[in-house]
Length: 115
Image 1 (tube, rainbow, N blue to C red):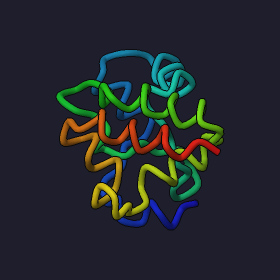
Image 2: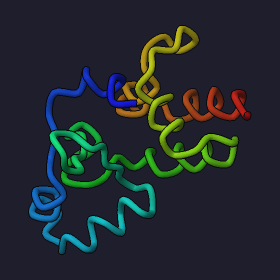
Image 3: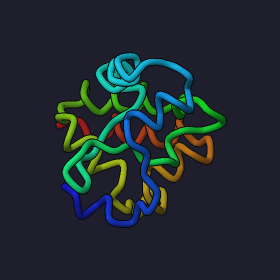
Image 4: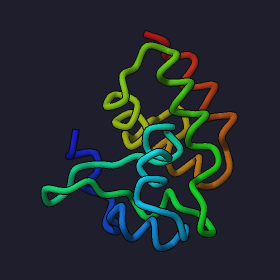
């Protein structure tokens, strides 16, 4: 799965995100468990892509989109891989469309892919 994340150049550690949010590391871990954020193992430790933090908060549309994918039969690794894989029907990566505020288009596509 890590190869789909090779295009992500900027990462935060869990501790850095805790500092940004001014919360405990435990709270950041809960945000990950709740799918408001996610981590990817990079250089041996869990890291969070910087672009899913918008104006000091988790990307608002991320949790709901991940939940749609999980409800559609994806596991978490598959959901994250899908978000970072080019899709001609958008065109582009679903994560980029979420960041631009096009969550409806991304979620419609995600629902159409139910496994």
